[in-house]
Amino acid sequence: MLKSYYEILNVSPNATKTEIKNQFRKLVRIYHPDVNSSVEAEKIFKEINKAADILLDDEKRKNYDKFRSTDKSFYSKNSSNYTFSDLFSKTKKEKPKAPVPKNGEDITVSVNIDFTEAFLGTYRVINIARSMVCPKCGGHKFVNGNKCSYCDGLGEKILKRKITVKIPPSIRDKAKLRVKGEGQFGLNGGKNGNLYVIVNVEKNDELKVENGIVYYTAQISPAKAVLGGNISVPTLWGEAVIKIPPLTKANQSFKLIDVGVLNERTNKKGDEIVKILIQIPSEMSDEEMELYKKLNEVNKKENV
Ligand SMILES: [Zn+2]
Image (tube, rainbow, N blue to C red):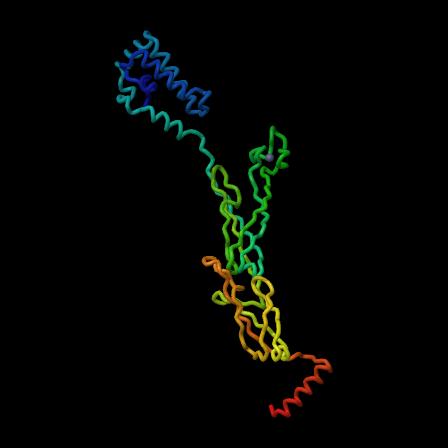
């Protein structure tokens, strides 16, 4: 349905010349090509100029009113059908669509840490490469018809970055850590992806951890077991030296306190249990053999 000039300017048919002029100025500020470049705005701008041209000229307005009264059906009968906000929403709807926001992809990397690090917590520096739309050519690959020199015509740039990732204590094998927003860049206002770090914990043949307690089996010689002395044992925190008493038996256990798994809540370290295995050497020197023979003689006398 065609709109009347009054409807175009959104004024009453009884509006005064000043009212029409003010309304016209208001609309010009919205639809002037300098401030609104959409095709629809250009159309409206032409319409409001034409309407103002008629309605602000006494002679033309009189003729126009006469014409309107003879053929009312030609126009919308209810001028309120076409309101100011309609003008807005109309131009909004028909503007070229804004680019759709696109969230960036996630990046997943894996790191290896050793057994001790897994319990103590550690850091890893991760190198990531993120691609972004070339800021010079805006991803169009060409600038003024020439291949974009900044991105070498690829339309994107690779940004390399080092990220230090904190690996918390007591982490389990294959745990997945998330570093928020460090994935690929989002486009058109979309969110960045996340960086996921998969933590591989290398096995440790010496130390075992069960229910927060560290276990270690120490192999000692028969002589050491009999005479006692210092032995070196690994812990999560490095080597420790413990003193075993004379006549230590096979499978006897010793508890080391404050060298085990760190309890994050209490900030206290747990225990390590050292089990003793007495190992007979696979080879022995003549001297050692002689000593054992002597020992055997003594044992015989004592009937052991
Ligand atoms: Zn470029």
